[in-house]
Image (cartoon, rainbow over all chains, first blue to last red):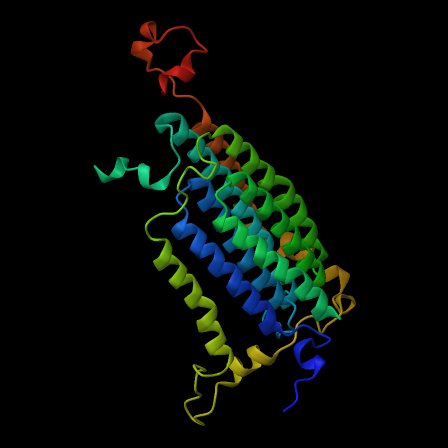
Length: 119
Length: 202
């Protein structure tokens, strides 16, 4: 079976390509959260994961799914992305404030040196 | 053509994301994250969600990236190759992270597709999701009166208000956490002059 150019690059992007991209982005962010020693690096990775979810929501909302309520499905997906961006901004602001406060207190932001709760 | 644009954005984003999680220089990670967020904004435009693209550029690329840059500059001793940047769990974390796209690919190939109970064939909803195309509907088909803001201010007004309260709480909380610790009322005499408060927390 010959692989044609249009098989790899169809004129319209299939939803699954968006989903695979977002899965890869999410996985990279997950690795960053688990493996990074630096608390700021962990927050950066969390932003990557949130962005992967945003891409997923936007792609699903544009995939022509049937409307289930008064609001079109296309609009609902975009609204969810807006609320997610709001939550991400709040999380980044509070997280960075906590990191700066911890740095003032302990002179470090490396996750394995912050052992206050370990007793 | 649209797929070419998609991959022209997606491949650099993934590479920049790898830079974000691997580089020892945290400021370089911030710059890479900034570029990746701009790329995701481009994806939103490609998805015909111009509102989301604009928000992404303004809030993420304009706000969060600058916020991170300032935080990095306030926190010393975190950049450079001389500081080990990964925990002991790096290899298990890498394995776990690799498992996610592999699992997704397996699902995509239908190897783990949900079987319909009555017919024994793959679930039509799963098949539908795997073969569906995005952006098949042009944005003109949506009535302007049914756009983003009427839905947000009419049908989703309670989540909207909750989000605004969340932002307020986050703002006040960030200021409170970031403020230097105040000496207690009883020990004010020995706390020294005001403005020396910063020394208290050290």
